[in-house]
Amino acid sequence: MKRQHISSGSKWEEIVGYSRAVRIGNCIEVSGTTAIREGELQGKGDVYTQSKVCLEIITEAINKAGGTLNDVTRTRIYVTDISKWELVGKAHGEVFGLIKPATTMIQVSALIDPEILVEIEATAVIS
Image (cartoon, rainbow, N blue to C red; front, side):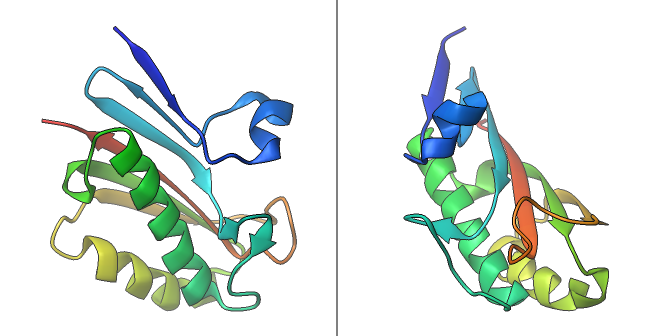
């Protein structure tokens, strides 16, 4: 099967050796996504805004790989403060409320930058 790599253009992709997303066959896997656009964290101190930006970036990656949000079957959400779950959940629900993918939300002790409050992954299967 053909392997398609989707790049965000981040310098970290080459340094760390990853892609924003990878499509093999009808499956798209989107890497852990934070709210960084053009090297700048969006929504500093605001987990809701950061979640929305993560989901926008994920949507763009899935679209570049030939899929749509309706193809998303699973998301994984990593937060640094689980007490803010309702704000993260609100953002997720605004995007996936009718699609209802399987999901998991986990509190982690830290993400790669202390100002990053949330990181989201996604899996999509194109039917």
